[in-house]
Amino acid sequence: MKNKIYFDYASTTPIAKEVKEDIGAALEDDLLGNASSLDHEFGVDASQAIELARQDIAELINAETAEIIWTSGATESNNLALYGVCNFKPQGHPLSIASSYAEHKSVIEPLMELKRKGHRVEFIEPNKDGYLDPASIAKILDRGLDLFSCMHVNNEIGSVNDIALIGSMCREKNIIFHVDAAQSIGKLPVDVEQNNIDLMSLSAHKIYGPKGIGALFINQRTVGRLQPLMSGGGQERAMRPGTLATHQIIGMAAAYRLAKANMENDLIHLTKCRDLFLQLTGDIEGLMINGDTHNTFPGIMSISLPDLHAESLLFAMDKVAISKGSACSSESDEPSHVLKSMGLGREEIEGTVRVSFGRNTRFKDIEVLTQSLKKAVDHLRLLKGGI
Ligand code: PMP
Image (tube, rainbow, N blue to C red):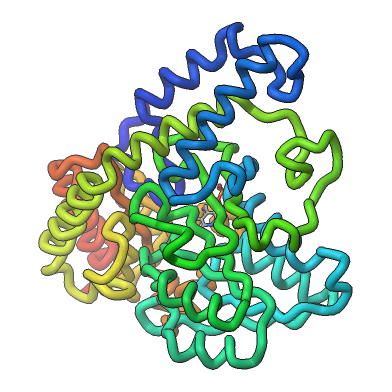
């Protein structure tokens, strides 16, 4: 056990006890069968367990079971959604796609590649609080799009897009609407039917499930408009071939059932964590909270101290595990594209750290966190000849 308190739930979450138990049971010989080998009961049992798991995923988002395709996580789901629509042969002409600069790299990079391949791709900027203004979306939708893609909850600052409104705007114009919901499923209610969502990317490890498993929701009206990324044995109605990972899928379903049961309490708990954090850091001179402080997902806080460097802060805060921002971009030294798109300057971005809370965060942990932050800030400012 590491000697640090974990505050990086936006990057990944610990696997819940119940999920571990279900995964353990799924690894026993009873479920050893290949879910595609339906000639004997081992395969049939595995297949039935997977179909039950599919129901748990579908129930959480109000989808039909046939609309859920297993993938390795939200990165693959985003790729399958975006390349899938654009590579669909019968269309045979460049498509018009729009998204935002605040998206995760697993949306931005495929879109950049699609642009290089000749599709018309445009990105809109989020507002200063990190979410998309309906007016700027309306403007871009009016140009005549085939596909609009945006995230629900932003992984760096916790801003929440109004997917119900965006969904209705897209449906009115018959534009395919893709939502990257990696950070929101199981944390905020999402109803794909009511919100007019056509494609939605899901991940298990952001909600106390195992890593390496996720799903793409593809509704009935869009399924015929997608080209798979791979060809092979025809599993998942040929949309995503390959032997299914029974234990991972069962783990994801257990995590989603747990999320459904806990969503309301989790949200209340995270809101209390956020409020305590804001209260205890209110007297830190020069501390900026990025994005709206209250109209956001409360589990993710992005804070900037423009006179300090994030690396120095992380190094000086020895008792806690926090991050500079997105884990998926932390291997590159580029400044956060999300914060840049919200209009933050270089010093503000360089002095930004992300703190994220979860089900296991205790209020006394937040006291340790804020004390550690204050100590680090004082120490670093003193070294600089400070304020
Ligand atoms: N989208 C968002 C918003 C994310 O936060 C992440 C994970 N950092 C992903 C996509 C990628 O998810 P996965 O790790 O399941 O591939």
